[in-house]
View 1: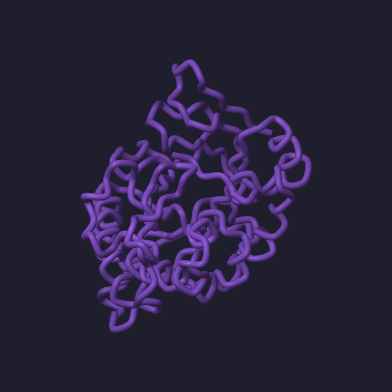
View 2: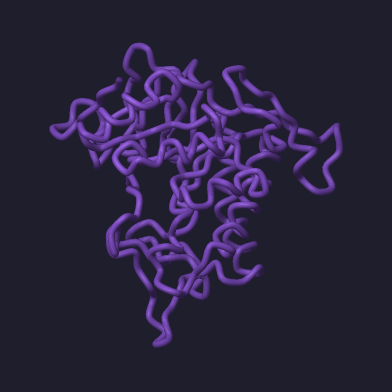
Length: 275
C-alpha cells in the first residue's frame, strides 16, 4: 500500500546529481568486491513521466518513462522500473513469514503494529536482527534484479517515527545501509522512501534518489532536492498537494497524483494526474 508522511500524532554515492544520468559501479560501495564483480546501476532519469503502480500493474499511460511496481509484479517493457518492497514492516497478515523474534514487541511481549496499515513492525534494534531482516528482504531485491527492474524502493524507512520509543533513526539507517549494499551488488539503484528528516544523510546511507509522498502537501519537496538534487519522484494524493508540487517543482521533478489506494487503471477509485 501507499505510505503517507507522518505529520500527525499519527551505485557508489553519486558525486553530483543533475540532469545527466549517472552510471556507477557497486564495487566501490560493497566491501570485498572487485572490479570483475562490480555491477553497474543508474538512478531514474530526472523530470521523467512517472506512474505509481504499486497497487496493481497496468499498461503505462503515454509519456510515462518510469514506473514503480510491487516486487511480485513484472517490470513494464522498455521503461525504467522501480521495484517496491516492504522492508521495515510485515505485510498485513504476513507475520508468519518472519521469525517470531523479528517482530517488534512491547514490554508485555505483544507484537507492535502500525495501526494506520495493520502491519507489524520488524525489530531492527540490534545488528544481528538487522542482518537477518536484510537477508530476507535481500532475496526480494535479488528477485527484482532477476526480473529486470532497474531500482528498488524499500518502504517504511520511517517506521521508527510511528513505533513510539521502541525504534530510532540509527536503527533505521543501520538496515537501509545493508539494503543499499544488497541493491548495488545486484546492479540496482536504491531510493529513499519518505523520511525527509534523514535525507541529509543520504550519502552515508548509500541512497541514490528519493520517492517522496506528499512533499508538496507538506512543503517538504525542497528538503528532498537539497539532498538529492532533481533525483526526486513525487507522489501526491490530493489536488492541493499536486498543485503545490507542480507550482514549485513542476519543471524539475517527476510528479504524479494518484488515488490513496494506488488503484489499477479501470478501477472505480483510479486517479492519475500530472502537472
